[in-house]
Amino acid sequence: MEGTIYSLIPAVIMLILVLLTRRVLISIGTGIVVGALLLNDFHLMGTLNEIWAVFYTIFYADGALEIGNILLISFLLFLGVLTAFLQASGGAKAFGDWMLRRVKTRVGAEVMTVIIGLIIFIDDYFNSLAVGQIARPVTDRQRISRAKLAYYIDSSSAPVTVIAPISSWGAYIIGILGGLFVANDITTLQPIAAFIQMIPLNFYAIASIILVFIVAYFHFDIGPMYTHEKRAKEEGELLDPKRNQVSGDLSDVFDPHQDGKVFHLITPIVVLFIATVIAMIGTGIMETQGSASIIEAFANTNVNLSLIIGGVAAVLTSVIFHMRQRKPRSDMKRIFIEGFKTMIPAINILLLAWMIGSIIGALETGSYLAGLVNNSSISVSLLPAILFIIAGLMALATGSSWGTFGIMLPIAAEVMVNTDMELFLPALAAVLAGAVFGDHCTPISDTTILSATGAGAHHIDHVITQLPYAILAAFVALIGFLVVGITHSTWIALPTTVILLAGIVWIAQTLMVRRKKKAS
Image (cartoon, rainbow, N blue to C red; front, top):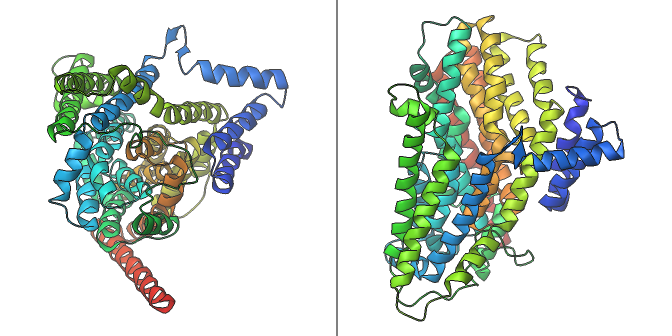
């Protein structure tokens, strides 16, 4: 079963169940069981042992604790506590009141959210969780659905992080490029220069960033997003009322303190940002031999440790503010308990996502998809587009952009070195673009889960509502990669991608307006 077409079965079953049932825990759980059965030739005891093994190795493997995973789970718990303090202190309410006096429209609130998402480009995890805390009070007041907030967070985190040299993603990719250039005896390119040249070639990231501004400014609500936005505007229901409470949402748990001030929200988040960035640089320098540049520091940083340091600093800041508020104050023990409780759904999904990732890795799904590229006999001009599709499928199936980078970038480099060096950078950019596209579509991606958590949205609602936008951006990006493969020109392919996106949006928006007029 390993490394064959059968290795796709768990991922396909899981994705079909997600779309049909919209129950993510059951869907991922089914994928885990099916994958374990395939790995153990349908032997029951072997399957049960496999499932237990992929669970406990999340916390303990190779004779040592999995500190990175434990730290990330701990950070989520601290984020829940921070959210509880921001709500109980009245800081969220005060910030919402303050912003409402300045942001008068839904468009302003939506554009503000997108801009904040683009500014916080240091790390996708941090972006996904921090932007929601900043923007949610304003978007809630303007009756913007939580599903749309989650879309803005997700589609302005990975796309900007993957094209930012000074970010955890950028540093990781630059590190991979350095190894690839040495392995393939490429001396005419330097990793950082190559990364910068690949920025305008990442058509999916660029299309996604443009699209979030279009959605924000023109209210381009398509597919399930239209339903969520219509309900939010007309009924004030920001979430589907048929679903249970979501991660990160404590709006009905605490009554905001009447003495709440804007700085009760802003200061802890600023502390979170500064402490996390300093910790990322510090841990990166400690892991780098000799003197370290900023890029090298980010390449070697310990993201999860940095997040927990930032989280603890932010929570301590909130505790100090809480103690200085006059009574009646919310009970601090209750704040911690409710904060922890609100993150349990997100942690459950994350644990299952890690488990299915291990199962899919053992089935060698990524290797099978990568082999399709190596074994294909197709025109060189089609390779960037093909690599984009394969990388998208791999990230969709595995839920990991970084894993896709690690597998597909070396393959793309080897293929292009032996075929057409003029398309070397477009091919690598296609892998980066495809990995982000697949990450946006899969319910088992860390950033998908964390974006929904940061927005206080239902996880599956976020997946379903983001999907049409991701597919639209991927379609125009695919055309861009076809054009660059044929013309070898970035400056023909990029305008083609942007113009095509604008044209499709204009046609779709025109048809939507006409339909509304006929209905009225």
